[in-house]
Image (cartoon, one colour):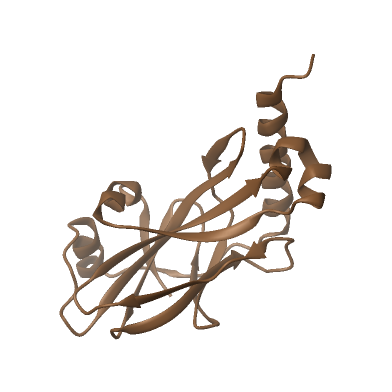
Length: 174
């Protein structure tokens, strides 16, 4: 008898191996100590800037979920603004306004269906954005299922409750 949980976990592992094999580590730099302290303390920026914190969320299918860890590039209005490796959070400060955000596996060329998020950011605001992958039903059926129903990249915005998700992560800037 085939255990559906094991098939889902197997599919997630195969996808992770495929993506890691293709993904290129992202080059960035460690944030200055003042910015690192402000991020750790959830201190908002001044009213002329919004602070975006981009980090790994979950890779999930209908049967399983795990923390995403593939190197990922972060785009704002179609322009690459930086990226993250495993256990990193990227800090980008923006003028208030409406922006379109998306992410992709570093190096590109993946089969991910990319979903964009349009959002207004306000001065003095901290926005937590998690890069997530929805493997949908394809992830439950291994590599063949992933080919038929490719995963989707999503950005999930979560408010201050996400501050705990970046604890212990290395703070980086573009």
